[in-house]
Image 1 (cartoon, rainbow, N blue to C red):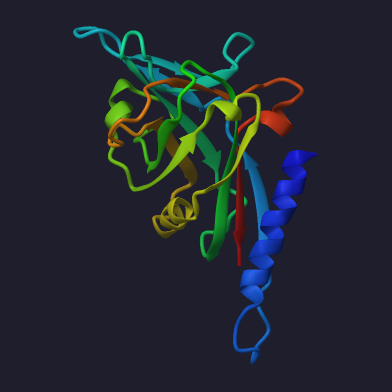
Image 2 (image 1 turned 90 degrees about the vertical axis):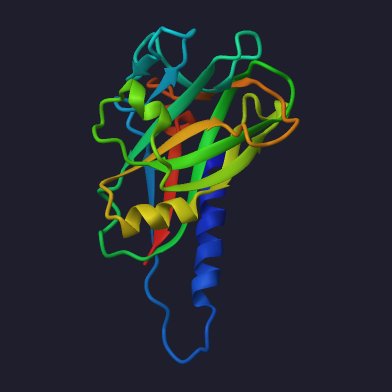
Length: 214
């Protein structure tokens, strides 16, 4: 219910923005698509001690129902989450009005505020590889995750700039890498767990991308 209500609010805002103008012509029709992440492609890459290759975990299953991003405050080893949203419902010639990401935080290892970086990436394959850990970012946005976010939706995360770039590049998938923003001086170090369930609650709790376009 909350996800539906928030989505409706975003649509209303997009319609209001598109309707603004000189009044001399009718506004173009607005379309909205809501895309759940691809649970078979979603995953995360975890660093290991020096000399040991990173561990790649990909594909949600009965035993893997979440992805991790951030830095373990005990070992100081980092994990980076990867989410994939197929763009089949967004025409290649569409103009992006807005794009918002909705995630649910299952847990936070540390109680402090954690700065998070969200990068648009384009891996050479949908199969994650250790080298994807350091893929070049095509566009970036940042957010803060708070202790109060545990068990709740973090929405709306504005990824319009990332989606616009993905559309400009005509990428078939909107793929993001989520990691701790280590460039923030004095920020807390911690690990967040993002819900990526394949169960009955997937429609309400799994990562969702909402795109408004015309």
